[in-house]
Length: 87
Image (tube, rainbow, N blue to C red; front, side, top):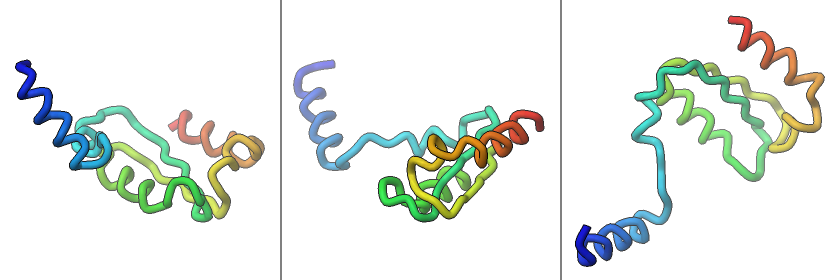
């Protein structure tokens, strides 16, 4: 790329604010389990709904907890993940 092209590219990235992979989600062919907390103060649950709508082979599991519950409550999420993998 020419330097002027790089400047334009960087400007576009700054104008958009952040990089996104949303455009690529409909192309994913793997099954995906999306686990999201409805009381997550780090990543809004709306993100999980968007991913679920865009990923063709996804399954959404919502729980009433927060961001770290997947790590702190393996007894709850282990069976959910196992059931998904056994499908």
